[in-house]
Each structure stands twice: as structure tokens, then as C-alpha cells.
Length: 225
Image (tube, rainbow, N blue to C red):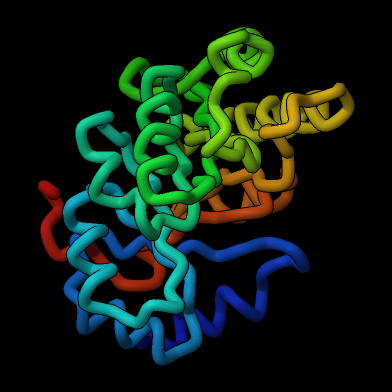
């Protein structure tokens, strides 16, 4: 199927209020433009410098999402334009995003990444760490960031029950935070969970944003990237 047909299929089947992030990492500009011409406006990248180059080369009404692990020394490349950073996993990173946002007179929306998978390689906070973070004095000093919600990646497994359990635990925590008083810079509007292999379960469990690459663009151009 073509990129255009793939995007149409996803857009038609998305629940109301859910957003499709087309994961364009390692894809050439021409293929991203093909998705753009099919009506897709939200794209996700996992490397800051690649994201910067694509932003410069493509239409300016694209909403660029940073979905990969972000190093503090790379924040400056995307701070002027990034629409949402999904992968915030430390206070140190938040402080750097705040610093770079201040330089370009922006408030940058971010999601806090939670570690919900059994795999040790996944980044992210625990639930307790999130609560401690948003109530800390250091966090309250950050005026140029906005926490818009949470992100999580399930264990890479064929066990759908396990994947569902992990997504459900994240949704429960999301709802729990929504039911408590939050600092002025924190809102729980976005729950980013679900990728090409597990987005259907994620949507069933309450995801508001799915990150799909392979199922739109086909296999990645460079699998080592």
C-alpha cells in the first residue's frame, strides 16, 4: 500500500481526540513530503540534528515531535520549533529544555516518560519519581516548560496481555494525576502510548496519541539508525 493509503486508513480508524504521530526517523524528505501531501501534519523523530534538518527542508506548518531519548547537549537544536518532546526522563533534561526555551522566548510542551516495560533498556521515571518531581522546588522554578501529559513504551513482546497490563497501569496513573491538584505548569491532556505493533491495544486502553512508523512508511531505510 502507498503512504497516502496507509495514512488514510489510520486517520479514518482513529478514535475521536486521538492523534497519529507519523514516525519519520531515517525516512528521506521525499517520503515525508508524500505523507504531508496526504494530509499528515504531525511527525516524530528520534535524533535532534536529523529533526532540525528536516524542519528546515519541509513545510513550516508541520508539528515536529521529539520521540527518542534526548541528550541535554542536543536540546538547543530543536528548541526554536519543536512542538512536543515525548521523552523527558530526568529533571536535568527538563532544566536544559527550560534554559533553551527561555533563550528563544518559548514555552516548550513536554511529556514525562514513564518506565512501564519489563526491559531494563527503556528509559523513564517511576510513578513515585514523577510525583516527587512535579512537587519539588526545583521543578517549580521552571517557567518555560509545560508538562502536557505522559508517555510510555510497553515491553517488546508478543504477549498482548502483558502489553495491555502495562498500558493500563500507565492510564491509571494518568487518571490518578488528573484527579489531584497539579502545579500550574502541569496538565494531563496527552497520553502517548502505542506504536506500529501495539497501537490497537494502546487505543483500547485510553491512549490519546500513537506513534506509528513502519506501518505507514514501510521498513526503515536504515535499520541501524
